[in-house]
Amino acid sequence: MPGPSRRCLPLLALLISGCALQGVPSASGIPSLAAATVPPTPAATVAPTASPSPTPTPAPTATPDPSLMELEATSCPGGVVLDWSASTHPDFHHYIALRSPNAEIAPAYPPIAPAVDWGDTYETDPFVTSAVDASILPGPTSWNYRVIAYDVDGRVVSASAVRSGRISEVVDLGELTVSSTRDGNRLAWQPYAGSPSCFSFYRVVSGGSVLSVISDQDTASLETDALHPGTTYQLGVQAVRATTLGSFMVAQTATITYTVP
Image (spheres, rainbow, N blue to C red):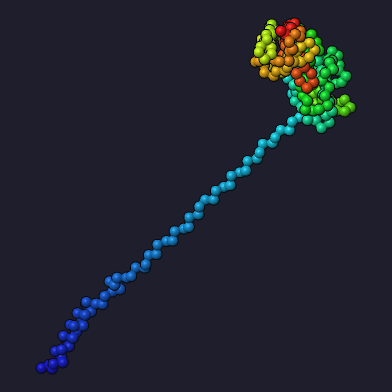
């Protein structure tokens, strides 16, 4: 009869085999720790750098040609008014204006015929830039003008273009009337209705004397105490266009004889 130890051996073997069948948990059965996910660091945002605005280059200023001058000729009753731009030439010495029936006027001096210097425009101040021509009779002829600047030796340094003008008949200011007032005497006439470019002032004259000068073109009367009772006067009113280099009459009244009461 077998002893107790022999009976225990099959039981031990059974226990061992059961354990073997059950086995040790495999590594695959053990949950693994996932690596911690680190969020990516966002790249730094670089703001776009504004391109500097280009600095505008100023347009070059044209340098006036010192050899050129502007000229305007204004046709008026009794004369022509010439206005020109000042010469900027460093060798400037004097101006002279020339007149010709021809459209071309050579700037040389003495003038080349038929151009003439009528004698009223020689000027050494570069800023005196206005003159008149009242040296010929009114008529239908258009005359051509040119102003030239010369150096001290008479060489041309600047010249204007040629401009034309015509001298028309002197205008009538109507009848001059004179009446006595409490404070003196009142003279009345028709105002000059022509272009303001042809007017500078009224001149009220008594014989060879000037009683008054009036610069308002619309004025048509004068109150004066310069006329003495019992005295006879030769009175008249003239509208005048004047410049530094000369003047002329554009309109006038007839001269009247008046004895102050």
